Image 1 (cartoon, rainbow, N blue to C red):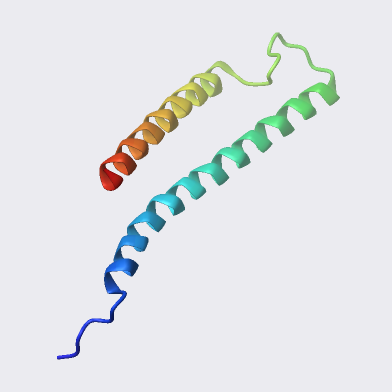
Image 2: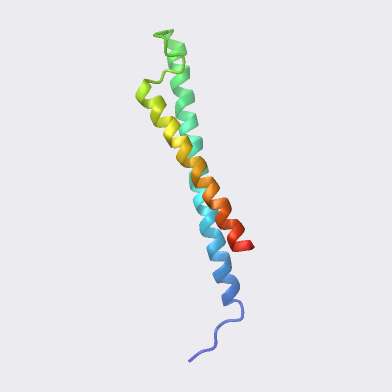
Length: 89
């Protein structure tokens, strides 16, 4: 048997925190990509001069899906914050 390295517990604690940060980073990247795609849709709609009563260039289904997605993201952020408080507290 070999003794554990002196910093094994630090690596374990950092690994947990890195998992949280990696998830947040992935979510932030996904959010930025979605915003960029929505911006591109708006620009293409404006460039074509279409005005079908859809100012954002989104169909009703896309709008509802976007609202649900935003609600899930907010719930996930709240859950992560409570996890962080529990881990640090």
